[in-house]
Image (cartoon, rainbow, N blue to C red; front, side):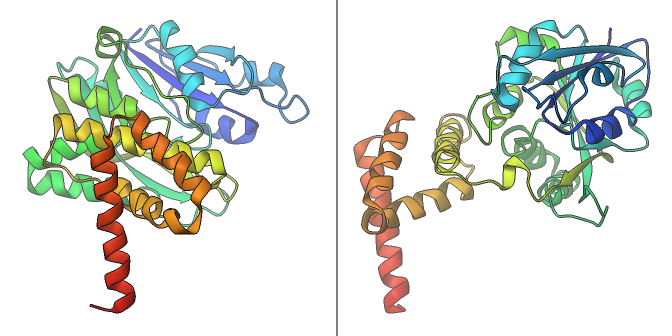
Length: 301
């Protein structure tokens, strides 16, 4: 078995069928779908088991545990030399089969590729892959900097073909947070890969859905996001100190403002920052920095 594609799924059987129809049927490719406790009134599990005519495994997550847990659950059963990830509401584009043939014997640890993005219902162009387009453009102009960005800033699980031996050697797994569960995994495979390749073809389509989890911001999701971005910031500080992280800076700016806007949330956020290894001195320094910025903005100087 050369390729394993892992797919978390929850309550979107029609979209999953669309995805499976874009994956070539090959003897050297297996698909593992992990159902994250779908509603039986929405999903016909018997039909789900027969959606793909090739090598197909359907697993059931232990309760509703999220995409990170689903991927972790499936990884030990993967047989492929290469592992790829897809979300059940996305799909692959023409050329994917040729891509598999081209890189199946590569000595790289990761092969990155490009994506486009559309609305899942209307197929109108969306912006969810814009950051990836930017990364690829940087790579075309400056391969050293572009490769570094791919390794530590491209954090989604899709558009990567990863050697399973790399994942197993370093026991790399996904977080199980409610949101951004893929950041740690992507950073670690990027960190430990000895050789990476970049293919500029848009072989994957990431879709936009109004009710997707990535657009849902509960109180816990907000704290999970700060937790993930804080770990990401620590990872960059320890391994790539020249790399900034605007997403972390923006969250810490909001955290500083919560000192006088939402004291309860401020305390929870402070605990998250401490949990991820930031010292009291660093945190207080960030608070003073962003409070001073707020004062300067209000006073317009």
